[in-house]
Length: 182
Image (cartoon, rainbow, N blue to C red; front, top):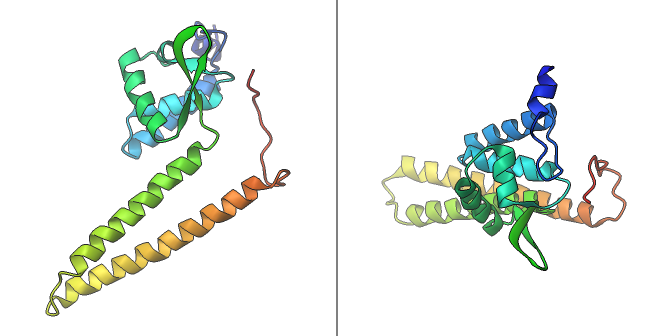
């Protein structure tokens, strides 16, 4: 059996086979998100859901990623609350299914914007309490605030441009879809 075949052998669960390229992508996304302070399993789950041609149950996600259902449940709750995944249900089926949110990256971006606003509030609150003799601190705080205000405006502008572009029905910059949902 070739390495690529070995990586996919036994991975077909619920009609969803994972290729060696899929595994590499899933693991790379897991490592990326781990570097960002999110559990690796969370990044792996997002990678899997990006590739999934249909909604996946918690059990199927756990089987495909070879992790505990409890870990999947914990992470899916976090991602659902942040808007990265959407919950799907089917009449007569008590299980919950999940898909990658069409607006996941915008939600992730919004979290970053919230972080910018929070750091600005913290910096401004402390700057207001600095005394006139604290010139070095005052300069540091002023520089930091100016940086975050500038960066925040750039981020807001970029998000507005993105949303306007996305709203156009035939955006020339839209990449072709490689997988279709069934």
